[in-house]
Amino acid sequence: MSESGGAVISELGALTSAAANAQEAGGRAPNARDAVRALRPSQIREVANAGFGVPDVLPFWFGESDQVTPQFIRDAASRALADGATFYTHNLGIAALREALADYVGKLHGATRPAEIAVTSAGVNALMLATQLVAGAGDRVVAVTPLWPNLVEIPKILGATVETVTLTYGPDGWTLDLERLLAALTPGTRMLMINSPNNPTGWVMTREQQQAVLDRCRQLGIWLVADEVYERLYYGDDAAVAPSFLDLATRDERVIAVNSFSKAWLMTGWRLGWIVAPERLMEDLGKLVEYNTSCAPSFVQMAGVAAVKDGGQFTQELVAGLRASRDYLVAALQRIPGIDVRAPAGSMYLFFRLPGADRSLELCKALVRESALGLAPGSAFGPEGEGFVRWCYACDTARLDAGVARLRAFMEAHPVS
Ligand SMILES: Cc1ncc(COP(=O)(O)O)c(C=O)c1O
Image (cartoon, rainbow, N blue to C red; front, side, top):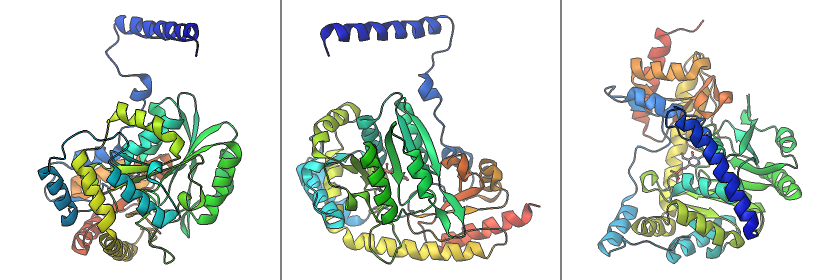
């Protein structure tokens, strides 16, 4: 841009800021930007906050296991700290982790180079970075919902508008109307966000659907951001990993895959994730990492190397346990009259219909207050989630039993006509 062009723009910016400031000076309270004020607060948090202080509460509301991170990963972090891994690292991550991830991703999804990997401060930061890379003010973003709210809110922070295509619930559980999604991918669309396996529904996109969507995005030049943080929590008999856009796309097209250490290795509190993206994006991505977090903590990255290199067996056992918990909870809930629940193919949640959940936030608050049972309201995942509640089953069966008994007692005490 020419210097004079830059000057005009900064002058315009100054005028806009001046107008906003003048309004503030006119007596308005010191507020955040309108786009930030318009963000939806987390309804899961709202229920959890209502539950703090409730004795013996059973918290199935958040998306994490009740188990700590495996010992071999914690040991790797301790060793790294003892060795003095306390400094800044390269913006895109330490070489050892980028190499280990390239190898891991390559084995699951086809050849991937370290230069196509960026280490991030967990999945949510990866989503923010991916969105910052390709979408901005005024852009149209499409998302498939119900959906973990962060994916829908992040583009809005950047001034983009988000249009949703809703999964439908029927005898086969949650399914996608592919034609509706393809129709929503109009020439003006900048970015598509797909989370499969999906939080909250457990829906898993089929390979054929992925191919059709990828073809459409290719045809129209739409960026595809694939949130695949639950890819290993997959219960299909055909593979140990859910179908991924990385299986179909080459590494030099408009596909950005987001992933996390939180779910497959129980590392929620560590805040470590990664992005697979075209190498030509990496220089710009490095700048964004610099201005967001600068890098992930170095001893945490070293723990990540241990997880990726030595965690295969752990993840396999974790998923076998989750599958058993899923089946156990589905069977237990199906025995309660009025509950409509199905076993999903992925993730670690049941998203099911419950009498009275047409006001799911109020219902979940009552459940926690009166029965010390912590579930997430369906409406937390968009208006289309109303009528449902989400239950994270990453815990042992004794705890599930206790939760089911409380739910049954609550429903008997509050019959819905
Ligand atoms: C769909 C989805 N994407 C991304 C994340 C981010 O996880 P984290 O930031 O812990 O890596 C979550 C967490 O629950 C999630 O459900």
